[in-house]
Length: 417
Image (cartoon, rainbow, N blue to C red; front, side, top):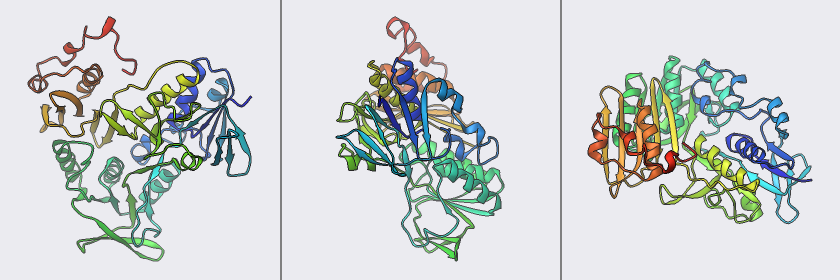
Protein backbone atom coordinates (compact mmCIF):
# COMPACT_ATOMS: atom_id res chain seq x y z
CA UNK A 1 0.00 0.00 0.00
CA UNK A 2 2.11 2.88 -1.30
CA UNK A 3 -0.52 5.56 -1.80
CA UNK A 4 0.10 9.29 -2.26
CA UNK A 5 3.47 10.85 -1.48
CA UNK A 6 3.78 14.63 -1.28
CA UNK A 7 7.18 16.34 -1.23
CA UNK A 8 6.80 19.68 0.50
CA UNK A 9 4.56 20.74 3.38
CA UNK A 10 3.50 24.32 2.87
CA UNK A 11 0.28 25.64 1.31
CA UNK A 12 0.37 23.50 -1.84
CA UNK A 13 1.39 20.28 -0.11
CA UNK A 14 -1.18 20.59 2.66
CA UNK A 15 -3.97 21.60 0.25
CA UNK A 16 -3.26 18.69 -2.13
CA UNK A 17 -3.40 16.23 0.76
CA UNK A 18 -6.61 17.65 2.25
CA UNK A 19 -8.39 17.93 -1.08
CA UNK A 20 -7.51 14.37 -2.09
CA UNK A 21 -8.63 13.01 1.27
CA UNK A 22 -11.86 15.01 1.37
CA UNK A 23 -12.64 13.98 -2.22
CA UNK A 24 -12.59 10.33 -1.21
CA UNK A 25 -8.98 9.24 -1.62
CA UNK A 26 -8.69 6.34 0.83
CA UNK A 27 -5.10 5.21 0.34
CA UNK A 28 -2.23 6.28 2.65
CA UNK A 29 -1.04 9.87 2.31
CA UNK A 30 2.51 10.79 3.35
CA UNK A 31 3.92 14.30 3.35
CA UNK A 32 7.71 14.77 3.44
CA UNK A 33 9.33 18.07 4.40
CA UNK A 34 12.97 19.03 4.84
CA UNK A 35 12.08 21.41 7.67
CA UNK A 36 11.40 20.29 11.25
CA UNK A 37 8.41 22.63 11.48
CA UNK A 38 4.78 21.71 11.19
CA UNK A 39 3.34 23.24 8.01
CA UNK A 40 3.21 27.00 8.54
CA UNK A 41 2.19 30.33 7.01
CA UNK A 42 4.86 32.26 5.12
CA UNK A 43 3.30 35.69 4.35
CA UNK A 44 3.50 36.90 8.01
CA UNK A 45 7.27 36.23 8.14
CA UNK A 46 8.16 39.60 6.61
CA UNK A 47 5.53 41.54 8.54
CA UNK A 48 3.75 40.47 11.72
CA UNK A 49 6.42 37.99 12.78
CA UNK A 50 9.27 40.49 12.43
CA UNK A 51 7.19 43.04 14.34
CA UNK A 52 6.42 40.62 17.16
CA UNK A 53 2.69 40.65 16.46
CA UNK A 54 2.54 36.89 15.97
CA UNK A 55 4.52 34.03 17.43
CA UNK A 56 6.13 30.94 15.94
CA UNK A 57 3.26 28.86 17.30
CA UNK A 58 0.65 31.05 15.61
CA UNK A 59 2.29 30.52 12.22
CA UNK A 60 1.27 26.86 12.18
CA UNK A 61 -1.38 26.00 9.58
CA UNK A 62 -2.65 22.82 11.29
CA UNK A 63 -1.57 20.94 14.40
CA UNK A 64 -0.52 17.30 14.67
CA UNK A 65 -3.96 16.19 15.81
CA UNK A 66 -5.54 17.56 12.64
CA UNK A 67 -3.22 15.57 10.37
CA UNK A 68 -3.68 12.45 12.47
CA UNK A 69 -7.45 12.82 12.20
CA UNK A 70 -7.14 13.11 8.41
CA UNK A 71 -4.78 10.12 8.37
CA UNK A 72 -1.99 12.12 6.80
CA UNK A 73 1.47 11.06 7.93
CA UNK A 74 4.04 13.84 8.34
CA UNK A 75 7.71 13.03 7.80
CA UNK A 76 9.46 16.19 8.97
CA UNK A 77 13.14 17.02 8.85
CA UNK A 78 13.83 14.73 5.90
CA UNK A 79 15.05 16.04 2.54
CA UNK A 80 14.12 14.14 -0.63
CA UNK A 81 17.30 13.71 -2.70
CA UNK A 82 16.44 11.09 -5.30
CA UNK A 83 13.53 9.99 -7.48
CA UNK A 84 13.34 6.75 -9.47
CA UNK A 85 10.39 6.92 -11.83
CA UNK A 86 10.81 3.27 -12.83
CA UNK A 87 10.48 1.83 -9.35
CA UNK A 88 8.34 4.73 -8.08
CA UNK A 89 10.49 5.40 -5.10
CA UNK A 90 11.80 8.59 -3.50
CA UNK A 91 15.12 8.48 -1.64
CA UNK A 92 15.54 10.60 1.45
CA UNK A 93 18.79 12.22 2.53
CA UNK A 94 19.20 9.84 5.44
CA UNK A 95 19.14 6.85 3.10
CA UNK A 96 15.65 5.37 3.46
CA UNK A 97 13.22 5.13 0.54
CA UNK A 98 9.49 5.82 0.24
CA UNK A 99 7.35 4.13 -2.40
CA UNK A 100 4.40 5.85 -4.06
CA UNK A 101 1.53 5.31 -6.46
CA UNK A 102 0.95 9.04 -6.97
CA UNK A 103 3.44 11.81 -6.29
CA UNK A 104 2.97 15.55 -5.78
CA UNK A 105 5.82 18.02 -5.97
CA UNK A 106 5.04 20.92 -3.63
CA UNK A 107 8.67 21.89 -3.20
CA UNK A 108 8.13 25.63 -3.58
CA UNK A 109 10.95 28.00 -4.43
CA UNK A 110 14.10 29.30 -2.80
CA UNK A 111 15.57 32.76 -2.55
CA UNK A 112 17.77 33.76 -5.45
CA UNK A 113 21.32 34.30 -4.18
CA UNK A 114 23.35 37.34 -5.07
CA UNK A 115 26.76 36.62 -6.62
CA UNK A 116 28.98 39.59 -5.78
CA UNK A 117 32.08 40.10 -3.63
CA UNK A 118 31.25 39.94 0.06
CA UNK A 119 28.06 37.93 -0.41
CA UNK A 120 29.23 35.41 2.18
CA UNK A 121 29.82 37.99 4.93
CA UNK A 122 28.00 37.50 8.21
CA UNK A 123 24.90 39.68 8.28
CA UNK A 124 23.93 39.18 4.63
CA UNK A 125 20.54 37.49 4.97
CA UNK A 126 17.66 36.09 2.93
CA UNK A 127 14.03 35.53 3.88
CA UNK A 128 12.15 32.46 2.71
CA UNK A 129 11.63 30.14 5.67
CA UNK A 130 10.67 30.35 9.33
CA UNK A 131 14.30 29.75 10.27
CA UNK A 132 15.32 32.67 8.06
CA UNK A 133 12.70 34.86 9.76
CA UNK A 134 13.84 33.90 13.27
CA UNK A 135 17.43 34.80 12.38
CA UNK A 136 16.42 38.04 10.66
CA UNK A 137 14.23 39.07 13.59
CA UNK A 138 17.09 38.60 16.06
CA UNK A 139 19.56 40.43 13.84
CA UNK A 140 17.09 43.26 13.18
CA UNK A 141 16.63 43.82 16.90
CA UNK A 142 20.37 44.38 17.28
CA UNK A 143 20.86 46.37 14.06
CA UNK A 144 20.80 50.13 13.56
CA UNK A 145 21.12 50.36 9.78
CA UNK A 146 19.70 47.82 7.35
CA UNK A 147 20.09 47.82 3.57
CA UNK A 148 17.52 45.90 1.54
CA UNK A 149 18.62 44.79 -1.92
CA UNK A 150 15.55 44.61 -4.12
CA UNK A 151 12.37 46.68 -4.27
CA UNK A 152 9.97 43.77 -4.69
CA UNK A 153 7.30 42.50 -2.31
CA UNK A 154 9.66 40.93 0.24
CA UNK A 155 12.05 43.88 0.19
CA UNK A 156 9.35 46.49 0.67
CA UNK A 157 7.57 44.54 3.40
CA UNK A 158 10.81 44.13 5.34
CA UNK A 159 11.61 47.81 4.81
CA UNK A 160 8.23 48.74 6.27
CA UNK A 161 8.79 46.45 9.25
CA UNK A 162 12.26 47.85 9.84
CA UNK A 163 10.98 51.42 9.69
CA UNK A 164 8.24 50.60 12.20
CA UNK A 165 10.93 49.22 14.51
CA UNK A 166 12.82 52.51 14.30
CA UNK A 167 15.66 51.25 12.13
CA UNK A 168 17.37 53.25 9.40
CA UNK A 169 16.37 51.37 6.26
CA UNK A 170 17.64 51.80 2.72
CA UNK A 171 16.20 50.01 -0.31
CA UNK A 172 18.42 49.59 -3.37
CA UNK A 173 16.52 48.77 -6.56
CA UNK A 174 18.11 48.29 -9.98
CA UNK A 175 14.95 49.26 -11.87
CA UNK A 176 13.57 52.74 -12.38
CA UNK A 177 10.65 52.12 -10.02
CA UNK A 178 9.40 49.84 -7.27
CA UNK A 179 7.57 46.61 -8.16
CA UNK A 180 8.20 47.40 -11.80
CA UNK A 181 7.09 44.00 -13.11
CA UNK A 182 3.99 43.79 -10.93
CA UNK A 183 2.24 47.18 -10.88
CA UNK A 184 1.77 50.36 -12.90
CA UNK A 185 3.81 53.54 -12.39
CA UNK A 186 0.87 55.06 -10.48
CA UNK A 187 1.07 52.35 -7.81
CA UNK A 188 4.88 52.39 -7.84
CA UNK A 189 4.93 56.14 -7.22
CA UNK A 190 2.36 55.85 -4.43
CA UNK A 191 4.42 53.18 -2.66
CA UNK A 192 7.59 55.19 -3.16
CA UNK A 193 6.00 58.22 -1.47
CA UNK A 194 4.66 56.01 1.33
CA UNK A 195 8.11 54.62 2.13
CA UNK A 196 9.81 57.99 1.85
CA UNK A 197 7.32 59.50 4.29
CA UNK A 198 8.12 56.66 6.71
CA UNK A 199 11.80 57.58 6.56
CA UNK A 200 13.01 54.81 4.26
CA UNK A 201 15.78 55.81 1.85
CA UNK A 202 14.98 54.51 -1.65
CA UNK A 203 17.77 54.27 -4.25
CA UNK A 204 16.35 53.56 -7.72
CA UNK A 205 18.41 52.77 -10.83
CA UNK A 206 21.23 51.55 -8.59
CA UNK A 207 23.05 48.22 -8.76
CA UNK A 208 24.90 46.68 -5.83
CA UNK A 209 28.53 46.01 -6.74
CA UNK A 210 29.80 44.45 -3.51
CA UNK A 211 29.39 44.14 0.22
CA UNK A 212 32.14 45.41 2.50
CA UNK A 213 32.94 44.04 5.92
CA UNK A 214 35.20 43.95 8.90
CA UNK A 215 35.65 40.20 8.80
CA UNK A 216 33.43 38.40 9.24
CA UNK A 217 30.60 40.96 9.52
CA UNK A 218 29.09 43.15 6.81
CA UNK A 219 29.58 46.88 7.36
CA UNK A 220 28.53 48.46 4.10
CA UNK A 221 27.02 48.13 0.63
CA UNK A 222 28.94 49.49 -2.36
CA UNK A 223 26.93 50.56 -5.41
CA UNK A 224 28.09 50.60 -9.02
CA UNK A 225 27.94 54.38 -8.84
CA UNK A 226 30.65 54.29 -6.17
CA UNK A 227 28.36 55.21 -3.28
CA UNK A 228 28.99 53.32 -0.04
CA UNK A 229 25.99 52.82 2.26
CA UNK A 230 26.64 51.90 5.87
CA UNK A 231 24.94 48.71 6.98
CA UNK A 232 25.20 46.33 9.90
CA UNK A 233 22.53 44.12 8.31
CA UNK A 234 21.63 43.34 4.69
CA UNK A 235 18.51 41.62 3.42
CA UNK A 236 18.67 40.37 -0.17
CA UNK A 237 15.28 40.02 -1.88
CA UNK A 238 15.87 39.59 -5.60
CA UNK A 239 13.33 36.92 -6.48
CA UNK A 240 12.91 33.18 -6.24
CA UNK A 241 14.02 30.06 -8.10
CA UNK A 242 11.77 27.00 -8.48
CA UNK A 243 12.88 23.95 -6.53
CA UNK A 244 12.57 21.61 -9.50
CA UNK A 245 16.00 19.94 -9.45
CA UNK A 246 14.71 16.57 -8.21
CA UNK A 247 12.06 16.45 -10.92
CA UNK A 248 14.48 17.67 -13.58
CA UNK A 249 17.11 15.07 -12.69
CA UNK A 250 14.47 12.35 -12.83
CA UNK A 251 13.60 13.36 -16.39
CA UNK A 252 10.39 15.36 -15.95
CA UNK A 253 9.78 18.33 -18.25
CA UNK A 254 10.99 21.43 -16.38
CA UNK A 255 11.11 24.97 -17.76
CA UNK A 256 11.28 27.53 -14.97
CA UNK A 257 9.47 24.96 -12.84
CA UNK A 258 7.76 21.64 -13.42
CA UNK A 259 5.49 21.86 -16.46
CA UNK A 260 1.92 20.83 -15.61
CA UNK A 261 -1.57 20.95 -17.11
CA UNK A 262 -4.75 22.45 -15.69
CA UNK A 263 -5.02 19.52 -13.26
CA UNK A 264 -1.50 19.99 -11.94
CA UNK A 265 -0.45 16.84 -13.79
CA UNK A 266 3.02 16.52 -15.30
CA UNK A 267 3.81 14.61 -18.50
CA UNK A 268 3.70 11.47 -16.35
CA UNK A 269 0.04 10.78 -15.43
CA UNK A 270 0.54 9.99 -11.73
CA UNK A 271 3.04 12.76 -10.98
CA UNK A 272 1.77 16.24 -10.13
CA UNK A 273 3.16 19.61 -9.10
CA UNK A 274 1.56 22.67 -7.54
CA UNK A 275 2.55 26.05 -6.19
CA UNK A 276 5.81 27.95 -6.63
CA UNK A 277 7.56 24.98 -8.26
CA UNK A 278 4.98 24.50 -11.06
CA UNK A 279 4.78 26.14 -14.48
CA UNK A 280 1.36 26.14 -16.13
CA UNK A 281 -0.44 27.76 -19.03
CA UNK A 282 -2.58 30.53 -17.59
CA UNK A 283 -5.52 31.57 -19.72
CA UNK A 284 -5.71 34.98 -18.07
CA UNK A 285 -2.27 36.00 -19.32
CA UNK A 286 -2.39 33.65 -22.33
CA UNK A 287 1.09 32.28 -21.68
CA UNK A 288 3.06 29.81 -19.59
CA UNK A 289 3.88 31.19 -16.16
CA UNK A 290 5.14 30.23 -12.72
CA UNK A 291 3.23 32.08 -10.01
CA UNK A 292 4.48 32.61 -6.47
CA UNK A 293 1.38 33.27 -4.39
CA UNK A 294 -0.69 31.59 -1.70
CA UNK A 295 -3.77 31.66 -3.92
CA UNK A 296 -2.02 29.88 -6.76
CA UNK A 297 -0.51 27.29 -4.43
CA UNK A 298 -3.85 26.42 -2.87
CA UNK A 299 -6.00 26.47 -5.99
CA UNK A 300 -3.52 24.57 -8.12
CA UNK A 301 -3.15 22.00 -5.33
CA UNK A 302 -6.94 21.63 -5.14
CA UNK A 303 -6.98 20.72 -8.83
CA UNK A 304 -4.21 18.18 -8.29
CA UNK A 305 -5.89 16.69 -5.22
CA UNK A 306 -9.17 16.26 -7.07
CA UNK A 307 -7.44 14.58 -10.01
CA UNK A 308 -5.63 12.21 -7.65
CA UNK A 309 -8.97 11.26 -6.09
CA UNK A 310 -10.48 10.63 -9.52
CA UNK A 311 -12.55 13.81 -9.64
CA UNK A 312 -12.47 16.75 -12.03
CA UNK A 313 -11.82 20.36 -11.06
CA UNK A 314 -9.30 22.10 -13.31
CA UNK A 315 -7.36 25.11 -12.10
CA UNK A 316 -9.12 28.12 -13.62
CA UNK A 317 -8.74 30.67 -10.83
CA UNK A 318 -7.97 34.31 -11.49
CA UNK A 319 -4.45 35.00 -10.13
CA UNK A 320 -4.40 37.07 -6.95
CA UNK A 321 -1.66 38.65 -4.85
CA UNK A 322 -1.47 40.97 -1.85
CA UNK A 323 1.05 42.89 0.21
CA UNK A 324 0.74 44.79 3.51
CA UNK A 325 3.07 47.77 4.03
CA UNK A 326 2.37 50.17 6.93
CA UNK A 327 -1.38 50.86 6.74
CA UNK A 328 -1.40 50.18 3.01
CA UNK A 329 -3.01 47.01 1.69
CA UNK A 330 -2.08 46.37 -1.92
CA UNK A 331 -4.23 43.78 -3.64
CA UNK A 332 -3.81 42.57 -7.21
CA UNK A 333 -6.16 40.45 -9.27
CA UNK A 334 -5.32 39.31 -12.77
CA UNK A 335 -2.12 39.70 -14.75
CA UNK A 336 -1.72 43.05 -16.49
CA UNK A 337 1.17 42.13 -18.79
CA UNK A 338 1.30 44.46 -21.78
CA UNK A 339 -1.81 46.51 -21.13
CA UNK A 340 -2.70 49.27 -23.60
CA UNK A 341 -5.06 51.35 -21.46
CA UNK A 342 -5.74 52.00 -17.80
CA UNK A 343 -8.37 53.72 -15.67
CA UNK A 344 -8.11 54.98 -12.10
CA UNK A 345 -11.00 54.62 -9.67
CA UNK A 346 -10.94 56.45 -6.32
CA UNK A 347 -8.42 58.94 -4.98
CA UNK A 348 -4.66 58.51 -5.14
CA UNK A 349 -4.18 61.48 -2.80
CA UNK A 350 -6.48 59.88 -0.21
CA UNK A 351 -4.62 56.57 -0.48
CA UNK A 352 -7.71 54.66 -1.61
CA UNK A 353 -7.72 53.88 -5.31
CA UNK A 354 -7.68 51.12 -7.92
CA UNK A 355 -6.04 50.92 -11.33
CA UNK A 356 -7.95 48.97 -13.99
CA UNK A 357 -5.82 47.58 -16.83
CA UNK A 358 -7.15 46.86 -20.32
CA UNK A 359 -5.79 45.02 -23.31
CA UNK A 360 -7.78 45.22 -26.56
CA UNK A 361 -10.70 46.72 -24.58
CA UNK A 362 -10.74 43.70 -22.24
CA UNK A 363 -10.22 44.08 -18.48
CA UNK A 364 -7.19 41.95 -17.59
CA UNK A 365 -6.13 43.11 -14.12
CA UNK A 366 -6.85 45.48 -11.25
CA UNK A 367 -4.45 46.83 -8.62
CA UNK A 368 -6.10 48.22 -5.49
CA UNK A 369 -4.77 50.31 -2.63
CA UNK A 370 -7.12 50.07 0.38
CA UNK A 371 -10.18 49.34 -1.80
CA UNK A 372 -11.11 45.69 -1.14
CA UNK A 373 -14.57 46.13 -2.68
CA UNK A 374 -13.02 46.83 -6.07
CA UNK A 375 -11.03 43.64 -5.76
CA UNK A 376 -14.05 41.50 -5.04
CA UNK A 377 -15.87 42.94 -8.05
CA UNK A 378 -12.81 42.63 -10.28
CA UNK A 379 -12.34 38.94 -9.42
CA UNK A 380 -15.84 38.23 -10.69
CA UNK A 381 -15.53 40.46 -13.72
CA UNK A 382 -12.25 38.97 -14.92
CA UNK A 383 -13.35 35.40 -14.21
CA UNK A 384 -16.51 35.92 -16.28
CA UNK A 385 -14.75 37.86 -19.03
CA UNK A 386 -16.93 40.89 -18.38
CA UNK A 387 -15.33 44.30 -18.86
CA UNK A 388 -16.66 47.62 -17.62
CA UNK A 389 -15.68 50.45 -19.90
CA UNK A 390 -12.81 52.62 -18.65
CA UNK A 391 -15.37 55.40 -18.14
CA UNK A 392 -17.47 53.12 -15.93
CA UNK A 393 -14.40 52.02 -13.99
CA UNK A 394 -13.47 55.64 -13.32
CA UNK A 395 -16.97 56.61 -12.20
CA UNK A 396 -17.19 56.03 -8.41
CA UNK A 397 -20.99 56.05 -8.60
CA UNK A 398 -21.09 53.15 -11.06
CA UNK A 399 -21.83 49.81 -9.40
CA UNK A 400 -19.27 47.37 -10.81
CA UNK A 401 -21.09 44.41 -9.26
CA UNK A 402 -24.13 45.17 -11.40
CA UNK A 403 -22.25 43.82 -14.41
CA UNK A 404 -21.97 40.34 -12.92
CA UNK A 405 -25.03 40.15 -10.67
CA UNK A 406 -27.46 37.98 -12.56
CA UNK A 407 -24.94 37.50 -15.34
CA UNK A 408 -23.52 34.25 -13.97
CA UNK A 409 -25.30 31.08 -15.01
CA UNK A 410 -27.89 30.09 -12.43
CA UNK A 411 -26.52 32.86 -10.24
CA UNK A 412 -23.44 30.78 -9.38
CA UNK A 413 -20.03 32.39 -9.47
CA UNK A 414 -16.84 30.47 -10.32
CA UNK A 415 -15.88 28.09 -7.48
CA UNK A 416 -12.70 29.97 -6.47
CA UNK A 417 -14.67 33.09 -5.68
